Length: 439
Image (cartoon, rainbow, N blue to C red; front, side, top):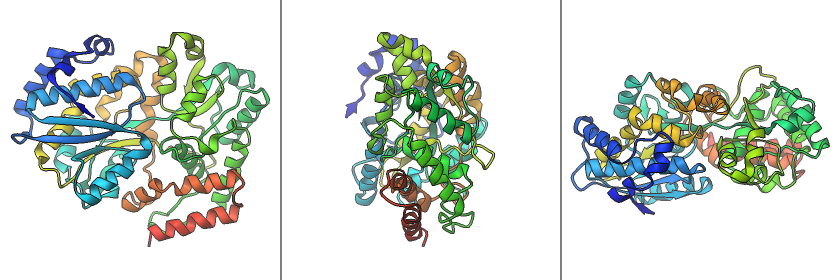
């Protein structure tokens, strides 16, 4: 856990300045001026405990911590921040929600606020303030946090995940241009395996990576967990076709993907064992920052997800919404901090610190400098606009959030791809689980 002091704000300024981030006195001056005119005034003696997901890009964490320290110095709010792995964020937020203690705020994944609709502070005023000031919210981002007209949290950003590949390997496989459709992508993966430069995508409980590529396959075949009226429709010929396609892909993968978590493909790619996967920009950033991996960084490229038979993008991108629990004793401080995070003076610099790992959800940041800082960053600027909500064509809400959190779709695909279950049994099990949720 980090108790962020003025001293921590002033430390590390050189690294943050290199990332284009406001540092030291400049950041503190902005924070003080902002606090004087902000719509929310932190309560006297305010103390906030915030859990966030564990960073994959160190400069993002540095920029975030500097921002937290500036907010503390400007408002007098004590800020205790700690990080958890992707896999642990939702369970620990659930414990806090159920016990009414331990956390004031949680910065989590996917549709986290939808899991606790009666346990969170409504953020309508914060969402309206930021949306009106910064060009409105992207559609999927808004759906991540809204229940009817109420905002259960604020969609801070999207961790964009796109195809990450070694161009030398795809060129050798006969694909000078990255495939734009499902058949072409499968043929490329087969050719890459034949060349001993395999692809690999997580089939384990990887909250970000496994959900992303398996929902992409499902939706790309026009298969859905529920319809627009939230009727369970997973048991369909389209789902069976999606399973067959995923199985054909998985036959080309590097061994071990059934047990992968969200860091496994990063490690395999950086070790030179993996040549195509889906991921945030963190693999490329890590390679760029390692002098011994200069050649790998130069050979690493990004591409949009190929489009399936449905004929349009079907991307599940990793939303990272923040919420404040309604047992928080300092709601004004919590709202002030969330708004402060997304002000232009902070957020554009924070995006630069994240180096493309975070994608904006407010339209005004389309022109943020990070998207032109490196040509290989550009594809990630699309993430929030191309994404579908986690509910697909169904209603965003607690039920859809539960289906994601319980890995129902991931397990259906994994059971079939690994041979643990046949098509009929894998689909039937997912159907039973979904019907229990959507009763």
